[in-house]
Length: 290
Image (cartoon, rainbow, N blue to C red; front, side):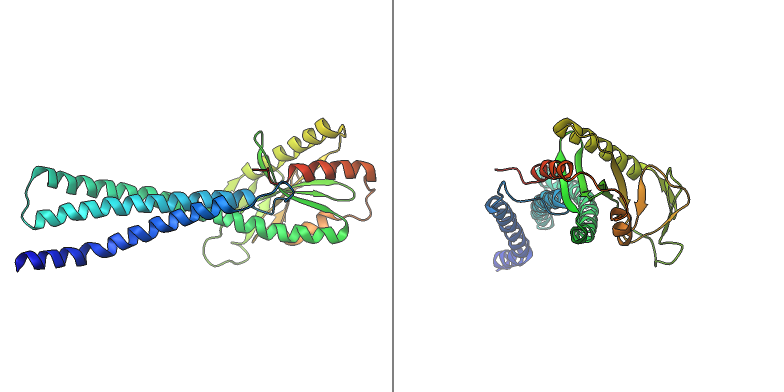
């Protein structure tokens, strides 16, 4: 009778965990299967935030795998702990229980770090999509817009605008706000050299935008022979920008993109030159064939 009760108790104890483990394993296999089945052709242009989306897919797979490992270790530790409570005092059982507990805790912290990275990537993805929607409206004013230019020498450029009169590189920076937004907590001050957010100061996004613009200038010159300046823009979704001194990089909110990128009074680029640049970027900002 006691043996039967022990078997029933163990079944009730471990069956839900095994079901969760099996369900997560099936989910991981389904994610991998669907990823392999996604048709990617050589003619498709890359949408806004495509690099971020691919990074999120990779993080999702890693997250599920780490959770599977953590649950597996937790189940093994639970089996050892159950054996100890049933009177099994073998040193190996105790070693498995205590070692498994430590490993499970380490895996949990390791997974939490991955969750933090996932949230950061998701914010970046949503920010690039938001800015991408604003940029696509510029096509009504004769601009050509390209997203997610990828190159091993530069990483990726979020967006590029080929306006009738100029070329712009657009870098997106997502900076979360703390507390309830108000005039003071939602304003960033740009003094031409650095960004002063509430609580901290940084110049890294400015350097990145300027670096990307310089790289694109050289890329266009190398492939078309055209020496045309590229202007860097830094867009800060959700922030009010107060510019106290202009700098090499123009810092704006998404609502100001049109006023900066569209200047109907400025002299236009030659149509033939602009078309060569558009053709070059159109080929560069496409999916690579599998």
